[in-house]
Amino acid sequence: MSEQELRVISLGGSLVAPEGIDLEFLSGFRHVLMNWLNAHTQRRAILVVGGGAPARIYQQAARELAKDISNEDLDWIGIAATRMNARLVRSAFYADAPCDIVENPETGEFDQGRILVASGWKPGFSTDYDAVVLAQRFQAECLINLSNIEAVYTADPQLDPAAKPLEQISWQQLQDIVGHTWKPGANWPFDPIATCRAREANLKVIVAKGSDLRNLEHILSGQNFKGTVISI
Image (cartoon, rainbow, N blue to C red; front, side, top):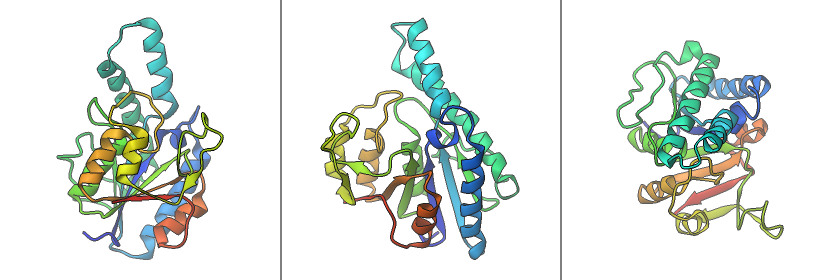
């Protein structure tokens, strides 16, 4: 399957459930993606859904209830949230997403329909990593990472007012920014473990603000867009 026929989208849970469920966003996202799919019969999409507010709220509650709770246990809470969100997203595309939710990106099949929806897999990384695995398996040369982050910055803009957005960045430069260690609930532009695998796979990733649906239209159609391209 070529890049022109398949789009893999890592859909941040902050878009699906920033506090409550964002029905307006989900409806708009469905409209944009279906327009792209319907333009050519051979087009398909893989959506990998994050945990959003449910993951953060439950993880924080667990930390308060058990001060010594392990990162693995916190990850399982986050994974449960991604699976709930993924089932919600699948319902938005129900007629076109007949395959069950993929929980293991190494074995999940895409043999029916035009849309495959995936959730979190196992502790140690985020759904960004699962999206990279699926992009490799189904030979997508580009992965679109949508979240509440509009671009990769030179530093965390919430901590450094001098941080600037980047139009392009190499995987090595991104690894220098995000490091090599996974932390449950952290808010990176792309998680460190996924960064390592994507770099090894020579994968191109586009980081963009998911709520800007017009911008998403431009990304899908190959037009100029706002965001960051990460590549070798």
